[in-house]
Image (cartoon, rainbow, N blue to C red):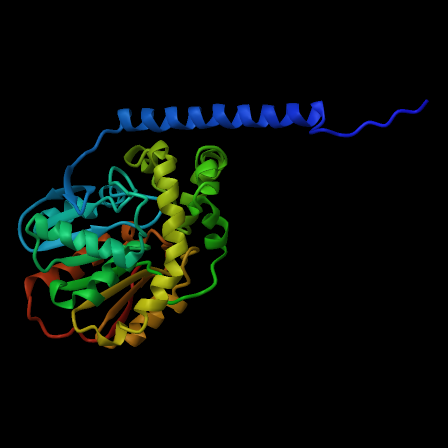
Length: 336
């Protein structure tokens, strides 16, 4: 007599595979958490903390004189301005402050709010007021330019001048946003940040940084100044993914305000930038802000502040020395 059987669940082989995958995920998450804690033990905070609206922000400060605020881009954190030399050089004649933006380095990024460029600008402006910073020159690199623009749009009288380096200023389609966005999604992103993302990050980080510098070489001491394990922590991966997701909407919002800027604006870019197209963003912004200056380095890429440090310092000096200076003559310069 033939007998019929009903399937009551997954086969033993499939159930074993699921259990093995779950175990591997848990072990990977524990390893990732261990590496993140180890990175923080080996690389303690180098600066101070200020708490604003329940968020603890990490920053460094040095020097005296007119204030300059440095806002880093995605992937990196405030040590980028130490590695480029800008922080120490500016501190010779200025009071210079560099923040870890929320979720980067040692700054917190609570999950109970949406961290748009505008939200970060509001929070950092409050932090600056709390440490008695008035009318600073804002220096933004890459994603940090969006935070600088947020302050300039919402509080133009607060901003003495804008120095925008390798920025993204107009909404365009971005493949990197689509690839990064899943790590920003709740639950799914949590799994990715503790499993797949840190592992792929270890494989791709050096190549990514080299592409950011290209065609210039990556400095040999880059990862000594900015340890890679700090960039691979789950909290920073989430910050990077969320910032990528908010980048296009921020540019779409700010683009309507550029022609209204009256403060001095200096724009810097690398002609070989593989991250942001110079003509579509920096050159276009220069044309729209008629009193701005644009300096393009033919031998540099996205990390042009390493190549054009002297020119950036000169631009900041000119903005700081004369609070009521006349608008600069429109110009496009090339630096070798």
